[in-house]
Length: 171
Image 1 (tube, rainbow, N blue to C red):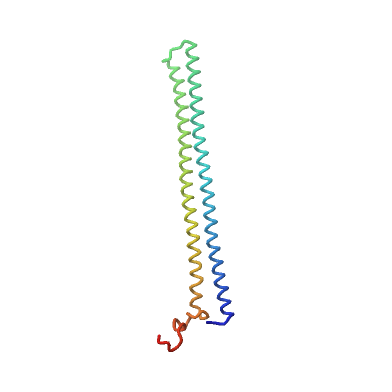
Image 2: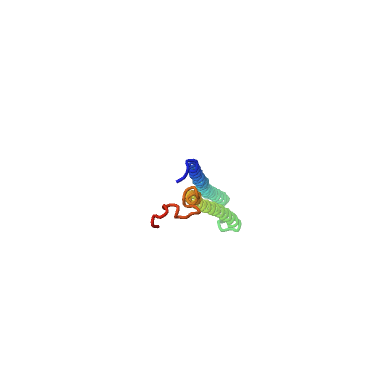
């Protein structure tokens, strides 16, 4: 087929193609690992947002109940009318506090939802990056090997398929 040096060069070329393909594959794996880390971070951020939301709700409810209890106790001790304008104004302040608490809880819920979406996105990107690395490795091998097959030293070069068959073989 060819002299030993040509075959050695072809072997080295194929080995180089394999190393290049391995590099492309490893690059895909590294990118996938990076996306997995980002998905993990998003999951932890979501858990923190959920815990903060629960804390805001529990703390706000406890404060509101304590304040309302104190307000009613003070007004009862002073023998004031529960339906007085002052009592209504004080209870309106408590309603505003409740609305603020609900708004803060809604913000944390939205943050948790955004973190959950990011977690899903990065998980999908991790799978994509790994598949892209495998595909890229295959393409790298193909584009490196196919031109070698058609080189004159391998036998499918300029002379075409005729070089594979001896002259007069009936082809």
